[in-house]
Image (cartoon, rainbow, N blue to C red; front, side):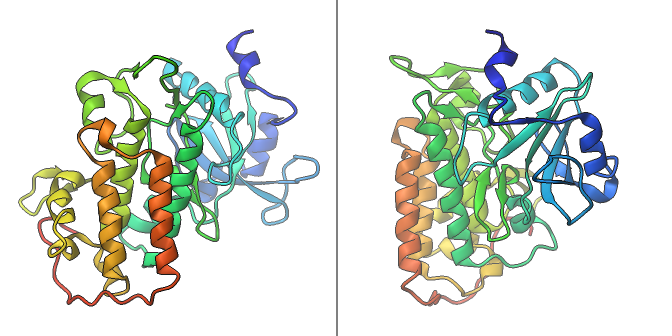
Length: 334
């Protein structure tokens, strides 16, 4: 069995003709451009759910079409890797793969369309709208459940590129993990880790991965800790300090996360006073645990889900009232 036979499941995935996807996206029009994925550009399109042919805009099923940008070996490998993993995964918090195209030189992946785009757009863009505390907790739980599903497989999967741009959101802000181009099976049996050259995104790398190239499930946990920190602060994983120097969000925020008195200095100022401080403290505690330098001391994703669900449960019973005064955040430019 070769790689292609291993990947494609004709009863689960639809093999699209290139011309269908070209018509569905209006010739990959700039007006339908959504953004950039790990290995290609992403466009919005429309197809008939019954025939899987191109449909007029807003008259059929909305889809996201990711077209391979890098025709070299790495791009091909990431495209194939995406299909290999997503064709075997089915979970409410993992983006649904609809089909693919491999006509001639064309390499395309087709997914369900996510109306609210990615978490990065909702949370970190300059003209972003306010995302409420409850909604942030909901998004964090959804993403955590998706990662927990990956880690709980009989052959555990390491995503290896957990970040806000790879967490997509439905119209109801349900979070789904996307972009599996760098995913890799995790250690099994007596293995303590798997080895890999450094791939992923700066600002999200676990320290031990940078130092040794060793990957474990806890590598994803660290990256998810950075995502939680971005949700908490409304700041990017890499930012400029007020003196102009680049600094990681982790380096800047960690001292504040461990100090309940100063915690408010790093919270997203768009939240203002609309959150219970006790919940914020518990959220910060989860972040600190995920970012622990010792990977064996980090929680599992199942434990992260449980702790976040406790916060959500409390949030459903509490009125958002922090009881703190406003203070300017220190150190990072907004």
